[in-house]
Structure formats: C-alpha cells, structure tokens
Length: 317
Ligand SMILES: Nc1ncnc2c1ncn2[C@@H]1O[C@H](COP(=O)(O)OP(=O)(O)O)[C@@H](O)[C@H]1O
Ligand SMILES: [Mg+2]
Image 1 (tube, helix red, strand yellow):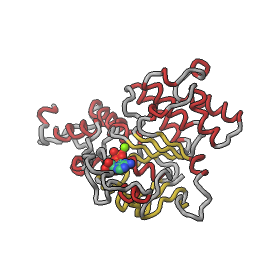
Image 2 (cartoon, protein in one colour; image 1 turned 90 degrees about the vertical axis):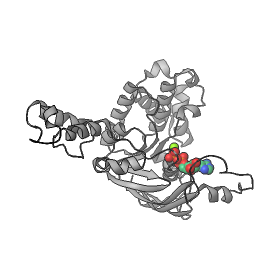
Image 3 (tube, protein in one colour; image 1 turned 180 degrees about the vertical axis):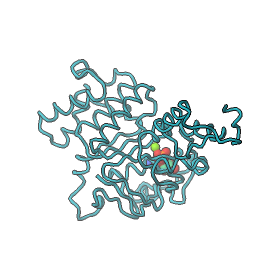
Image 4 (cartoon, helix red, strand yellow; image 1 turned 120 degrees about the vertical axis):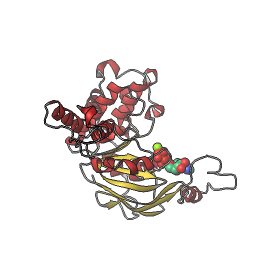
C-alpha cells in the first residue's frame, strides 16, 4: 500500500491538550528533549512511500521517527495535514473506520519484546488475528508460517512461554506476531536494534524477500549499513522536519548533509571515500555492500586503477 503524508504536523502539546491532559505541572517540562517548534512532534512533513517500496527512515533520537510511524498506522492523528494510505485519508470522518488498516498493516514497535503478554508463543502470535476475526484454521496456518519464518521450530516453541525466551527470541516472536496476518505494509520501528549480527542479517534477508514479494516496508533504523543495503528510498528527519528524501544512494552520497543531521556514512561509503582519497574514481553513490564489492573486484582485476597523479596514488600502488 502507498503511504503519503501531505503537510502533516503534530504537536504533543496540543495532543495532550486535546485529551484534556494539559495542566500546569505537565507534560513536556524537564524531559530534556530538544523542543521542535511544533512542540515535540512533526512539522509540515511531506513524503510518499510507494506501494511495494522500501523506505528507510533515519534521524537522531527525538527527531520524530516513531511519531511518523504512529501517524502512518493511525495510532495518532495529525493536528494538520493528511495521512493517506492507498490514497485514502485514514483520519477522514466519513471513512469506514480503521479496521482495514489493522488488517493490512503490521506494526513492530520499538522494543516490542517488552509488550509480550500471552502465556504461549502461539497465543502471542495468534492474538492479532483473533482480534481481527480470522477463521481458526487460517490463524493456525498463518501463525505456524510466521513463527517458522522467524527461524523457530514451530512444534518446539508453540507452547513455550514467551517470557522465558532470550531477548533476541522475544523480538523474533514479536515480529512473527506482526507478520502473521500477512500484512501488505510493514511499519518497523528500529527492528534490528539489539539483534546480534547473524540475527540482523537473517531478518534483513527476510525483509528483502517480503519486499520482493510486494510487501511495502517503512523501517526506522539508526543502522546506516542496513538502510543502505535494504531501503530503496531514505527519509531523514531532524527536529520533526524532513531534511532529506530520495533514492538511498543519493541521500547517502551527500556525506556533509548526513553528518549535519547526525547520520554516519555506511561502511561501504567509508571504504569508497578512502579509495577516492587514494585516487580511485569511485562514485559517491557507492554506499551499499554490493556496490563496494564490485569496485573492489574491479580493482583486484586491474579494471580500475588510481588516476595518475591522483591524491595518494603512490600509496595505492
Ligand atoms: N507521548 C509523548 N508526549 C510528549 N512528547 C513526546 C511523546 N512522544 C514523543 N515525544 C517527543 O516528540 C519528539 C519526537 O519523538 P519520537 O517520535 O519518539 O522521536 P524518535 O523516534 O525519532 O526518537 C521528541 O522530542 C519526544 O520527546
Ligand atoms: Mg523512536
């Protein structure tokens, strides 16, 4: 499904006021969070994630990434502007409710392992589908598929209490729960933070396969390598505003702008920069693992040589 924000603003101050929560001693005093002009939220945000696309969302802590995902899922409503999913305003009063969103969107919150509450892994993964009224046999088949997709032996784990699992395993259960209803769109809030490298790799491969099969993915991450390798487009937020939006390789090619918004280059990008400093003509868009491997292969095969007299070309020889 496509997800589009049209001039979306949200202030937690007015959200609190709207819920009658605003009083003198509250709420944003003393949090130490950098205040946006919007009052800690989002300000005039515009972007479009295409149907079937993979959008990486980056930005320093407090820049508004989780807020953006919650708005996209309809868990928050904007003060101004419109959130369109498949072209439909999900907050329109005349709409047919948000049940279809629950059915078609999977949401993995930040640290989802802290929100597990069922007594068995199976019940945990089945919970959302039960709530949505899926038929019993479909729940069984979908839960098995999702649990296996996340690398578990279904029969070994189905009756186990999630609370007894390791942190990484709990995370995988929480992700299985989001995948189980076969959502057309996945909203992922820092899903790989805290996963070990092997788990991260496997999960990113799974996301790649789901995306290839047509699932739209919006993924918040601080991991530049993961975003470069997985996301086709990247959006960077700072202070509740969009400061970069474009094809991932183009966004990451502009190291200066990235640094200003607190984002490190990918490892591939750093290797490319080192090679450039040694006189190799490596394009700035070389930011993915695949792209830097190709460059290194070319150098090894003698197809790419440092420019004569290029900076540091002596060292390179
Ligand atoms: N429930 C809330 N009440 C008040 N302020 C909030 C709330 N949630 C987030 N904020 C503030 O909104 C800003 C954006 O937060 P968030 O979207 O969580 O950022 P990120 O996910 O990029 O770290 C921050 O300044 C944060 O302190
Ligand atoms: Mg967040």
